[in-house]
Every structure is written in structure tokens, then in C-alpha cells.
Amino acid sequence: MANLLWLQGGACSGNTMSFLNAEEPSACDLVTDFGINILWQPSLGLELGENVKTILKKCISGEIKLDIFVFEGTVVNAPNGTGEWNRFCGRPMKEWVKELSEAADFVVAIGDCATYGGIPAMAPNPSESVGLQFLKRAKGGSLGTNFKAKSGLPVINIPGCPAHPDWVTQILVAVATGRAGDLTLDEFHRPKTFFSSFTQTGCTRNMHFAYKVSTTAFGQRKGCLFYDLGCRGPMTHSPCNRILWNRHSSKTRAGMPCLGCTEPEFPFFDLNPGTVFKTQTMMGVPKDMPTGVDKVGYIKLTAAAKGMAPKWAEEDIFVV
Amino acid sequence: MSENEDAVATARDTKYFIDRYGLSPADADHDMLLRMIEDMFADGLVTEVEPFPETDREFGKLLDILRPLSADELREKLVISGWILEPYGPDRMRCQECMYYLVHRRWCDLPELNLPAKPDWWCRLWRI
Image (cartoon, rainbow over the protein chains, first blue to last red):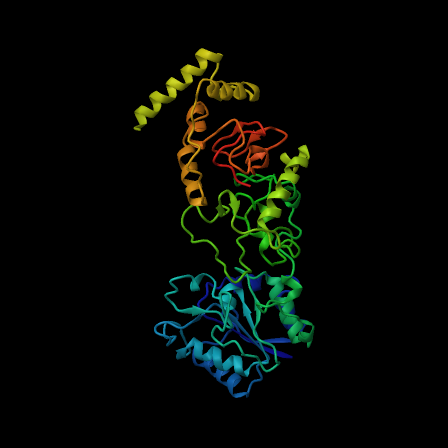
């Protein structure tokens, strides 16, 4: 039996909604098949008020063993570092986060906000939001660079806006069943099993990427979304096209450009009208190249690819 | 230019094409559109090749100007896009390598232009 406690900070509850949609395994499977005891969760917990506070205090004192502490949302520090803007059970949430993290064997940050600060931490960041152990790419966050949970692992980051439900439940099962030692984390504390490949890996538009045929308007099934519509699939680490959403689709498969939501810098755009779904360019060349590709190589590759692109690459081959 | 002036200019353009070719650009096929474009340049059409839109913001502003133009406003499309019938600059940029160019259809697929083009042509909406 592994005790799990889940709290929310500066969050929209999107990761909770995602978690409740998990299928492989489902949220119920965690309890019935994998021995996870959910002590409390904002959408599932039955306790209210003082009863929640009692659970938290017992976790901190050790009266209840806290195996896994899950946090969703940013740690809010405003105003002036006090955290008073996000109070929970009678005190700033940031204080609960610190003490519960120190008490837990494993600390898991779910979603962009908890991992890297996400949208709430965008400049000018009025809520003084940070992630648990990062603020965007900078290490530190709320718990500090050197924080390690009792297990010896730092915060396990599962980013995404929201995180895919199966990433969440599969990591929780690995931790709860004693296989945390199998987890290897990348420099941003993301489990490599999910975040080594790219969103582009498995994208159904890859052939259009290869032959440099662009999607030029929403709704087109031909073309690649990278060249004009701002897709960040070639430089975003996620398995969105390997572990499909709702088991059968993904943003790019549905014609929606990847926004790069599993990377620390998300959101990348300044969110002014017309900038989000448009590839950012400088002198006609994308500012952000596919990972590992330089500008000269990109231009040469484009010339070669367009020169040999087959006719079908320009057509909509997905006939209904 | 006011809406009324716009309408007058469009009507004048349409009349010009109908008088010369018997149909307007909106009704022209691929080859006829190519002919219309080449004829306009042969007649001395000068387009706004510069400034090149260095950033996507500047690029977007040009698209905003082009978007309301009708298919018959071919002359305006060519002028605003900085269209020319040869490669451009020391790097010899041309349609052939542009992301919007469909090499088999010989077509600029940028919705705001949506015109036939030859591989060695270029415009300032070029992007790779």
C-alpha cells in the first residue's frame, strides 16, 4: 500500500481532469490493482476543512506515512514572497508544500505549472509563481536546486498542459510498486521513458515535413504544421504521437499545431493576436529550428527535399 | 483608400483584364493567370520588393493588407507581395525553395496570394 496525497496550487485543475480520464491504467486501477491509497485529492477527497488539515498534519508528523506527494499548479509566492494569495487549510500553500515535500518519499509535479511555472509564471508573473524545482529553465523553484525527497530522487516532473493521463498514472504506478529505480530523469527531471522522443515522432504529417510541404490554413489535412502554423513538434520532447490522446489522436493528427507544452519555456509566444499559430521567422527562416538542425543544413535540406518531392506530397491523400 | 475608391479600383482592374483577355483573373485558369502576370511585368509593372519583412510581425502586416483583396485584384497582390520574375538577392532566393510553393502544381499555396508561379520567381513573402 502506498499513500498518495495530491494538492493544487496556482492551477486550473486541468491535470486533475486529465488524470481522471486515464485508461492505461485508470485512476480506479491505481486503487484496486496497484495498491495506491489516495489520502486526499481536491476532486476526489471526501474530507473538508479541519479534516483535510488533520490529514496534512499527520503526513508531516509521520503519523501517516506519505509515500507520494503529488502537486498540481504553481507555488504562489505573492504578495512579497509571503504566499498569502494562495492560502489552504489556514496557511499559505507554499508552507504545506515545503513540509509535505520533506515528509514524502517521492514528490511528483504534474503539469506545466507545477513543473516549470507554466502560464501563471509568464512575465510579469504577478502571483510570483514558480514550479516545485524550476522556474522555466532555471533550477531552484520553490524547493530549491538541491532538494531531494526521502527516496533520494528530486521532484519527478511530468509536464504538459495538461499532462497526458497515462504519463501520470504510469509514473505513479512505477513509484508505488517499487520500480522508481527504473526511472531515469533528464536535465529537467522529466522521465526519459516519455520525454526523450519528440512530439513529431509518430506524427502522421512527417512525410509532409520531409518533403517540405506546408499546411497553409487550418483544416488542411495535407502539409506539415511546422513551416507556417507555428507547430513546435520537431523540437518538443513528448510522446504525444506515440501514446495517443483518448487513445486515437493527438494535436497534430487533428490539425492543431503543437504548442510545445512539455518544454520549460512554455508558453513560447507573447500571446499577441496573430503570433501563436504562426511560425516565428527571421528573414524568412524559422527562428527555432528542429532540434539538432542548423540553419545552413536546414536550407540545404529544404532545397533538396523540394527538388525531389513527389506529386502526391502536395495532395490530400486522406480520402474520406 | 476608402471603400468606394477600392470598389472603383477593383472594377477598373476587372475591366482591364476582360478587355484584354476576355475574362478576369477570378475566372482564369493556371496558364492564363501566368500569362496575365508576365504581361503585366512586360508592360512595366513595378512591385514593392523592399522592405523585406524581417520578422513574422512585419510578415503578418503584409498578409493583413493582402487578405481582403479579391482574386481580380491581381495587380495589387503582385505589387504588395513584391513579386518579381527572377530570383532575388545574393542567395538567389526563389519560389522553388519557398514553403508556400507547390513544385508540381507550380502554385503559390499562400492563401493570401493563391497564384500560379514559376520556380525561378520570387516575392518578399518568401519563407523557407
